Length: 614
Ligand code: M6R
Image (cartoon, rainbow, N blue to C red; front, side):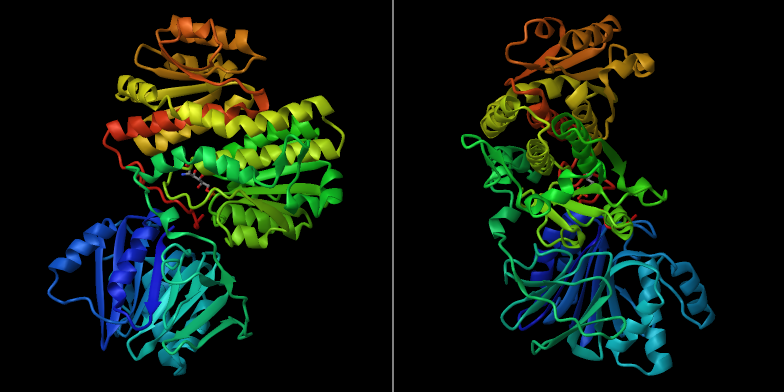
């Protein structure tokens, strides 16, 4: 949440920073701001999108100049989205400017103490308190700015990634992080700091991922120093990123979400590359094979995640229990971290996260590690915090996911979890050779089957046009498709703002059925062969109350197509693999409904892609 980007070099900083902010905008879009240093410190900031900032700067009398600068795109925590709460914030004497991603939890105490000392504040933010604190400490102890930043951060409780600029030091930028990501990019005579590598990759692929409590000083001549709050110098390795610029663009699609939905045949294939060979009869993951003895002896699996990744974990529960016969608990990371959970050393903990930066998931991992458990990460963003703090793991290799609504990461997570369950089940001798081979073979067919489903886009768009005015929607599924119902409902509510709920189909009669009337669309995932008759009964119950049934059915279905108001056919597949297919029409349905309702599909209100605060 909140995107930050900073530049020091020989070029004009403003265009670079604005370009970077556009790439960071998925992290928050309540306001945007830039600080530039060219003898004077100039601040431009505006409520709204990066485009609003650009318009504001175009109309401003002062031309944005300077070869050192920083920019921020905000997801509001403390203080409403407004011009005055936008970052950068400045010190009382106007010498320092600061941008921040995170939350300063003890800001109120610090603010009271600073007010006592005569400081006055212009915003309601926690961030402004920090820049005043640095000013106060610098003055009180007569410290160089780097030292003042460090000493101030010692007093701070909370999460932060910050960049500080000082009018008196025009050849220096300072960055620091704790629990919020910050990447240092090393180009030719130019240097960058950013929340992730996307604004940097155009200029250099050489980066250093800063670690918690790191403070970095970057001088214009290329000298840089990373040390922690205890003044211990840290020599981090420079990493070379394998990220292509075109991966960060829409590539001819109207929205990132649509591009990402359509990428799924390729991304699912990519997630299984080198990990699955059906003809030779194996599934293996490097991150697991190194620890397979320990993992196979685990008595229990705990899967932790948030949002869509939590839905993947729920499907993981079905997969691991059926295929590997290990009991699984699925935890919301945000609950797990605060309830003194019981963890045994022989638990196998799996943390799932697209971004690899979700604050609650990170904290839950720390707790599990403190209790001696082995933690495995299933992560998309290479080099992210979760990828680095887990004991082992597998990347899902979905490529950058920029649409705030997660789509391709979900299916790639599922394919990786399926491979893990197959590998573990086979290793533990809990799955018959015949069934193992069948699932391996069918897994290889998934990308082509997803392609077939994507061809139904026009039909799905038509269904969207029929139900787009609904105020509520229900999603029902059984077994492996119950978590898909949850995911379908989440997709709809987060981008179209229609209230939607997912339920196990059989639970409908225990309450939600009271909601059904002629205005209620009920999306039923009805592909499960094992519970077909029961799903037919559920659909009949909805029809008897005049609900509008949209059924996801198999191509060979005979009965449901006759009773549903609308149906979408998908190819048949073994049940444990069915979520990989059944979620695709639900993603498209939400996309079209949101678009028809005039919603911003890629940047839905109040949301951000990377939830780095609690
Ligand atoms: O990056 P993560 O997978 O840890 O993110 C978890 C959730 O914030 C995320 O899935 C969120 O629910 C998405 N908006 C869902 O589309």
